[in-house]
Length: 104
Image: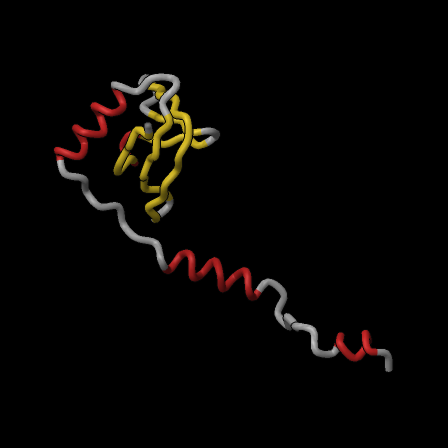
């Protein structure tokens, strides 16, 4: 038996196809949490930051999405009529923002 053929017998074997993906998905679902309430002061701070943004501002946004708190950074575009802020291809509702910092 060649070395290569011998090595194949020790290769990882997934007897149940898709089991690893299903386990990762279950773990992802298990770690989800409920969105917490923001204090009025923080909501006002975020609102002021949104109103003072310019086209050239780079921001770091912390937001709640799909049961998780996430962070995204980049150039921001605010759409007041839709109540969203766009960072790259990502659209975040104003109500999902938990923090917004303008980077200098």
